[in-house]
Amino acid sequence: MRKTLLVLCLLAVVGFSAWRYLSPAPAPKNPMERMKSASPLETVRAAKPTPPIVREAPTASLTDAKRVQMEERFTDLKEEGRRVRQTLIESDPKAAQAYNEIVRRPEYRALLDRRHQIEAAWASAPENEREGMLNEMNNLRQQGFALILGEIQRMQSQPSAPAPGGAPSATSTPAAVPAPAAPVVFQ
Image 1 (cartoon, rainbow, N blue to C red):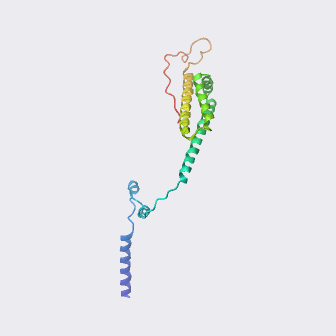
Image 2 (image 1 turned 90 degrees about the vertical axis):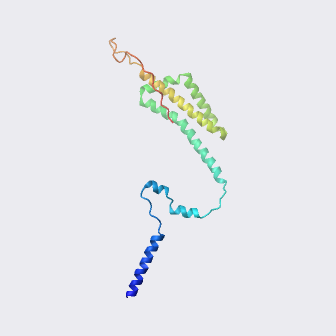
């Protein structure tokens, strides 16, 4: 019985020391150190050399994915103007009045006309020109927003109508009208 107990203890000591020797190192407690250390799977995967596989199908799918992304961006740019206009008109009566004023200006009409030309030419445009069309559409959108927001600021900085009774009110006498702030550009 003593020999069996001695063999079992010896086997347990050998097994425990083998386990300690062969077990992986514990993960560091510091998150930055954990990110720096390689996981055991990465070291096993890195040990096996793999021959390079040449595939040509994904390149076509990448261009298709890029084309789909460009189509979505173009649609977003088209719809964004309508959404912003509706939001402005519904949010503030002065914003609706400012939008009606800005639509009559020739510089805003030129932006709209150019935007409509790009929208009409988008479907038949070659792939190499579409990126430039997206950039131009985005620039036109930003210029249009800047004009609208500038007009809103101009209308809000105008003095109120004189008070009834002919006496000028304190709010209707402009001392010095500050320059309007730079317009906000949405991206």
